[in-house]
Image (cartoon, one colour):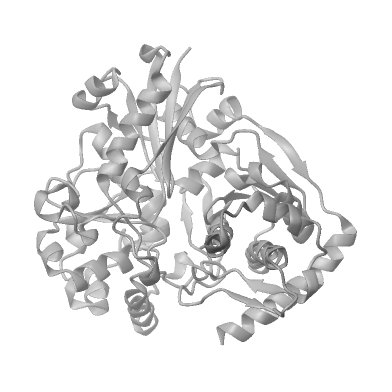
Length: 522
């Protein structure tokens, strides 16, 4: 039986699964990033979140060896990888992240800028200003019309502007998903390494209609520091079902695998998670974790959808348009509240949720906005902040926690409504990610607020499973990703259906959420 390894690099850890060609998960392994867990190189107050490439390299080795323990290594035929995004890094002419060089070992600007790093808001503002004033194509048109500080060009420009040493040493920038894939395939040279259609289309304004990345003239108009940068990057991209190469000898020896193992294309975690959840038209796949990503596929989209995170041909399923939206914070909102209360002692989110679930919707007038890490969708604005309303001396921690949970789900509904307003039909929701298993209350809340059934994928590692599906397709075991999903999918084992009485209550609270948001965002 042929087997495949899927790697999923999240915000806190990397996960791997070993899956057979028939979809049986033989093993799974998780490795927490050591430096990240220590809080190194981050400054949350200033929206700086950086990750050292050694965390990724050590994690790759640990989880692959972990899933191979006691298994037949000779049966492994393919590996594919997804990561967070946009998570770029400055590299030298060999494609080595600058942080791996001694002179940059402790320089956060020489490390990977995690997706939720919002330190480049000023650069995002300049990109939006330049794109709006540019006479001709609006190069944001396939990325929702608003460029975000979470994305590639904002982060690249921020580093160039603020760190001359890194600027002078950088030969190129690479996305995390492309770099770690290139490492395993033995090719990280910036000019020839494979670049993900998913990451470039959604995060770097790449589009075939204007020949790839935006033209140099536009980039220079944004800022003279971007002069010559188009030629330092790439023109071509590839979809994830295509092979990138085969496992490099050094890594084959390190992992105990054959150099015949095929390395598949890469992509962003939520897009691979949608494949792991067997995405189909008219279904929104919601990847729920520290943040959320919402993925929809459609055979054709005859307009540029406003205020989302992009629409890219082949970013999820080749031959279909992949549409991405999401929330900049979901589980992170809950973790923030736990940490806030932590000064009073150990706080359990499960205990808080249990008490909050006993309260009525909109408990005692306490309301919240979920923009604690800015707003990603609809209409990206990372300068926005979270808010809590209606507090008085009788307000309790469970009341506030319930308001925070409701606000995150109202934020999720706003995304669904935006898709519908733009003519994208959504009939059902499929959910994957840790919260879908940890919190039945949140999942039921989603069904009630959305007024739609919400199914939960049976696999608790849907993103890594999606990566394994791409690995199987790249290795030629299946002719396309649809066949891989059909044969390797784990299906769904939970379904939440809306309660009509609660739905009516939440409809009114949702309108108040929108009103609060309009007032704060002015």
